Length: 167
Image (tube, rainbow, N blue to C red; front, side, top):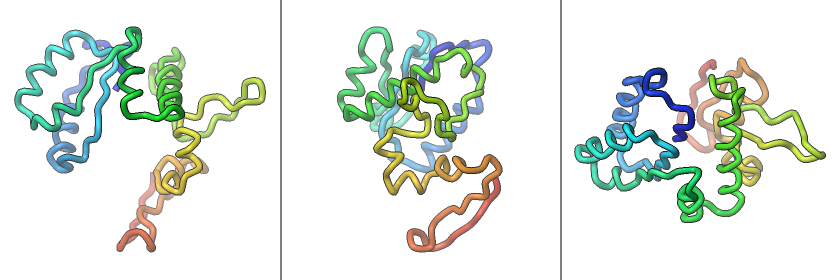
């Protein structure tokens, strides 16, 4: 979670905490790692209190880092390979652009522009993941072709039941 530009007055929504608690209750031990970037001091203080009441294994998976001091890059070095690390850093830089500060970014669309013949950062995923069979199973891949997509959840050969829903 990148807290760049976060404001306690404008960005605080208690429903997010409720949603996070529900996810953790219904999907225990599904959390791999949470990297909290540039969190304000009030958030760090709140976290110290919250982590006392949640599962210690879950609390240990939360890491606070800063972009400016190199701790983000050190954290990424621990678990993200070179291409994934570069994609994540580019994604954070892209998300911090002024024109994306109010939810305008269309993360599900492939970039249409190029710079010097090279495509600009692709917000959907790293190049390796985009070409993998797993990417085709994501909602993002299904949204890429049509904004009013009807998505097929599950594949008959992968899951027992199939359902469809409109987006």
